Length: 274
Image (tube, rainbow, N blue to C red; front, side, top):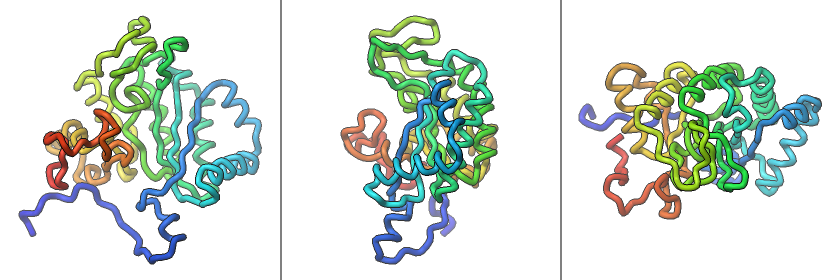
C-alpha cells in the first residue's frame, strides 16, 4: 500500500514455538539480564589481573544470580564513566577494559545492550562532575572505537551519555558539579536542544556503526532529534529504521517525564507518527 506510513523499526524475527525455553532465550520478548560497571583505576586493574576464564565465570555467576538461573542472550550493561568526566580523553586502559568486558559476554553467548553515562549519584555529600557537551563529544571518538572493535558483541546501544543516568536531562538532579564548577543544590536546567542534537548527530554519523541498533527513551525524541536527519539526508532510511525505543522509558505512569504517559496527547503514539 503506497499510502501506508513508513516502517518505524525494521528487524527480522525468528519464528517462536510455545516452549518456555525459546521464549526466555529470545530478547525480542523483553527478557534480559542487567549489570552495572563503574570504571575506575582500581576496577580496571582488578579486571586486568583476571584470566579470561575467571572473568567469564564471574559474569556467568552474576547473570545467573540476577536471572534466577536462566541463560538470557542479552544483558543490559551500564558503564559509568564518571572517572573521566574531567578529562578530555578516555584513557587507553579504559577503552581496553570496555572491549574486554564485551568480549567476555560474547564468549558466554550474551550480547550487550550498552548504556554509557557519567553521573547518577543524587547525594549532595558526594557531588559528581557533569561533563560539558564538548567533552562528551570528544569522548565519543573512543566509544566509536569500542563499538567498531566489539560490534559482534553488541545487540544495541542506548542513546544515553547526557543527563542523569544517561536520561537526557539533569532535572531533579541535586548535589552535582556542573561545567562551571559549582555544586548544584537545586535542579540543573536541561541541556539545550542544540547541544543534545549535536550528540545524537555524532552518534548516528560518526560513532555507532550504521547497522547497529540504537534506542531512545521515547518516540517523541526520535521525531525531534532523528527525523530531521532523515529528511535532510544526513542519515539513510535504513539507519532510521534501526532506531527503536527503550522499553523501560516508554510505558507506565510511574516513569515521570521520561516515560510515555498515555493521558498526555503530545506523547500518545499510534505507531504512525514517528
